[in-house]
Image (tube, rainbow, N blue to C red; front, side):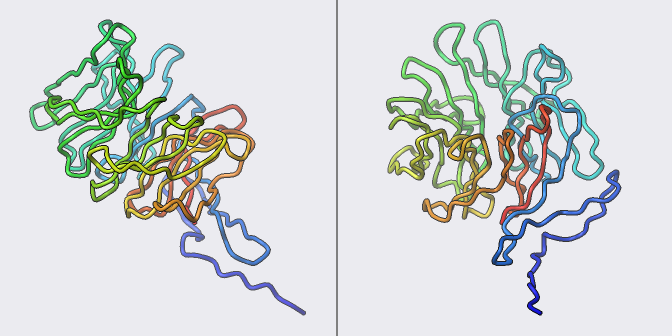
Length: 307
């Protein structure tokens, strides 16, 4: 009798977690016997609309945006140790979007809705009792700053800005000075993510039609195309080990999470569900992703191992 022997990878193991009864990470096995994806682990269960998760510098908690009430978007902090949650900016009654943090934890950044602009950039310095600085994009009421990320050396913050040049990627220092535009192309450039060594930036752009992924040097030069899909490839995130990029794509019919090598090779689909999977962010160990999944019309944070 022929017996199929399957080699189970280290992440396919039984885990007992605090405040979870028993969680078994399921492996999906192909006919060749190679495990290519792990089962999903749900991290939240309120079902509210969520977006823009990001790990805090401690690596043990996640900040994310949630429609806490039908008319209010806030940033919450989720502890992976005990599943407790708290508001990150309880003193701010405005809408809060797209949190980002300096690697040393000193600067906490987010976008705030306001009367003077649609969304402004907020930077809080925790070494100065939370002293706050604001950057208001030029233009009228509809001017916007979105999709924040801080460079690995903690000296600059990157973002997408709406301006007379359209939606472009720009950066400021942490004192919100020295504005530099990194893209000035046709179409829209959005969702910057910096490589761990700080030398390259991956982003999504519609400069050639549909949204695809592009990589450029940290100063904005030497742009090269990474993907070529007739649909949308969006929200890329560079892995902490520098070798891969996670992103959302509708190339197979609906939004799913994919990973690709930084040279554009070895494309792999990570999620596979008839509802939407989006907003992937890497765990600091680079072996798993946290993302927002729609399941039965509800939206929660999930974690999945990356093959």
